[in-house]
Every structure is written in structure tokens, then in C-alpha cells.
Image 1 (cartoon, helix red, strand yellow):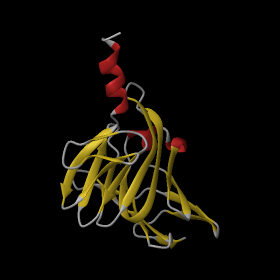
Image 2: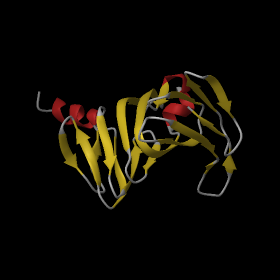
Image 3: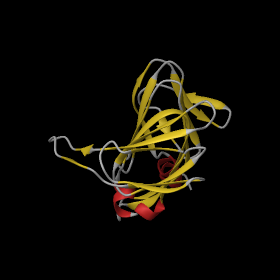
Length: 177
């Protein structure tokens, strides 16, 4: 039984804080479980910043950058490194979060759900930013995705809100929900 414990522990760690400046941390339930580079992330954690910023790198290469006075909840994250498929659900509840797609969005895009209090975003392997104001209103902006060699492309996102559905497929297109 002791041999299984490390496997279970590894399965729970879905990423880690890769960068942090200023104040912020990871909340698990009602507890602050850590802050700073290397803090491990699990499903149902919330990344919260006050006067700081944070970057989280997930094990499928998904990346989120969180600005000051923001909150991001990791609702669900399941990833199979052998098939590079899985399921990802994130919710931005306050502030600004930039999302960059990893392997799950590239190989299981139908299983990626990013949301704000007023919108749901279907990701088709790309980058975007979402800003949520104090009363829950959202602004979503499609961004170019660039690799380390400076090669960039623009993907597509589908934003659904009470007002209807909008497809963003050009760099810096935006919608308000």
C-alpha cells in the first residue's frame, strides 16, 4: 500500500506556481496552502492575488498569468500524459487572467471550459485574456499565440453569454459580457 501513495500524491499535483511577485497565494478550501514559486496546485484550488502577480504552469503546458487583485478557481483538471488528452475547467471570478493553451486544449478542446461570472469560453488552442470587474462583468480579448522562436498564430475562441454567442478569430478582437 505504501508504494501507491506517491502515485496518488503525484496525480493530485496538476501544476505549480512558476512566477510570483508581491502578495498572493493558493487557497485550498479555507486554508492558504502556500505562496511563492514552487507551490503545488491541485484541482479545486484558488489562486488569489492582492498587490501581486502570479503565473501557474500546469502539467500539460497550459499557462495562466494572474494580475493584481485577481482570483482564479481551478474547478477541474485531468490529464493523461500518454495520450496528451484530458479535461480542464477554470473560472476567473475577479481581475485579469491571461490563458495560454496547453496539450489538453490542443487535443481535447471540447473538454476545455473557461468561465467568468457572465461568460463561458470555448477554447480552440489559443491565448486570450479575460477581465472580470467588481460586479462580475467580463471583457474577453483574443491574443496571438507566440512560441519561443517568435512565430505567432491566432486561434479562435467561442464566447457565450446571456446576450448570445460570439466567435473571436482575429488578434485583439474583444467582447464584453
